[in-house]
Every structure is written in structure tokens, then in C-alpha cells.
Length: 56
Ligand SMILES: [Zn+2]
Image 1 (cartoon, rainbow, N blue to C red):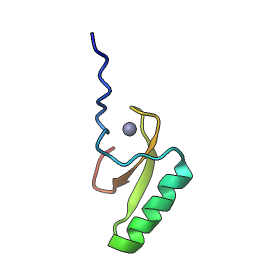
Image 2 (cartoon, helix red, strand yellow):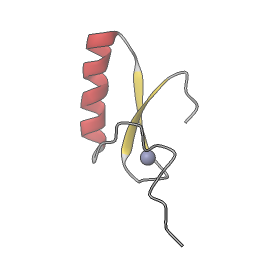
Image 3 (cartoon, rainbow, N blue to C red):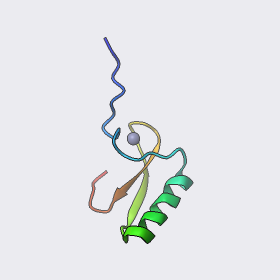
Image 4 (cartoon, protein in one colour):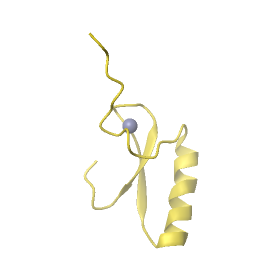
């Protein structure tokens, strides 16, 4: 059986560190006025950004 690499978050931006994600969130906030939160993903163990409206 093939082990699928397709994670629920495969289409999200991912970051190796919390700091990288936080930096990207700050940039997005400046550029788009979007407030993003940083969270560690339980699926891939990397960091993603989520809008406040998403329930992640
Ligand atoms: Zn993930």
C-alpha cells in the first residue's frame, strides 16, 4: 500500500520555525491588512498561518 503524502494542509504555506511563520504573518498584515495567527500543525509538525476566521 502506498503511504500518501497528501496532508490536509498540503496546500498551505508551511514554515520550519515559529519565527519564520511569525515574520510572514507580519508581512501579510502589512501588505494585506490581514491578521494571521501562527500555529504548529499536528499533521506535518511545521508551522502554518491561519486567519482568525479559520478554525484550525
Ligand atoms: Zn501542516
